[in-house]
Length: 238
Length: 242
Image (cartoon, rainbow over the protein chains, first blue to last red):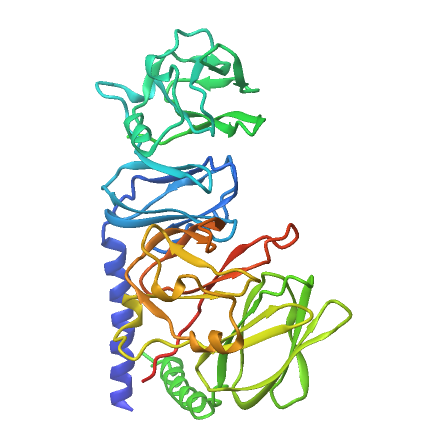
């Protein structure tokens, strides 16, 4: 009897002590993460990190993005895969070196014949003292088209790198990852081709108030021109 | 201070209960893995019926043309299988085979209404494979009509036995049941050429990683209703000799 009392006492105290220790451990702040964007017009997709599906993106439909908040992954090498919902076609299989506290976007586009993908680091533009006081955007041509596309933001002077953009490649996507500061305001977004013909206009104006960091992209396919669409994703940056 | 008896009794009770549960564990079912492939274009669908000792019973649902399904079924010395076509319930296949426990098999239905064909493979690795998770393995069957097919996996030179393969017979299918190890891993475009050098089928985005065991098959007959198509069966398990 006495021995059993001792055992009970010991286990009870270990339990209590253990929970004390747990409470006083500082928890690391999990900053950063990845936003998955599906601009792959031919199918909805499944996204995998290290061979596990990304919860809540099961599947990720075309023209959708998530998760919100971005999916955190511990710093280090991670395997990113993207599969089409059509015939389990693997569209992307790549290794990404995730850095501490960085926000990323994983963008899939193209066709089953020519799937394309790139990953951006989503950063505050260089030299900005007060990130909450400015608005900044970046533009990607993710459409299946041979035409070169220009983004018009309201009546603003078109930004040089947003003029006559061909469809992105993995390299051009990464090269275009910087957000470019624009005056705050509310704007109609319009994409035109190199002949000045309007390709798509976003039906709702884009609110670029202070603290807005927005990726704007053209998606769609020449095989069906009614599919051209100007999308926007509000991003976390740091 | 009065000692509470509850933790002590709880501890004792838990120990006794755990012992009870252990003693009454039921023996596990002995099962075999059974993949089924429908490469029979002349019917909308087929139905398989299996007799594992309780008379012929339907296996799953009707399987559409090009369908690939997997079942875990009771192992037995003599398992009878019947395959019926959706065209007037014509019996296409009536066969018996042995299913060893914890082994994986694949049943391939192909041919025509006039001459339906079937073979069952033992989904086995070559003898010398140390760790199946570190390599990939592939098989290729030509289940299509009237064509000699060469399968290209990506841009690599075709594997010797995947060159100019005539339509299988049940014997050639069975003879080719062993997986061929390959280091050609990655995400591949598969293409099939006939012996005129014309491409007859193409399939993109096929994932072949270490630990993957895939069977590729050509199906169809080149007609509009059954164009040539490359099927991919991703094996849930493979058999090692030892």
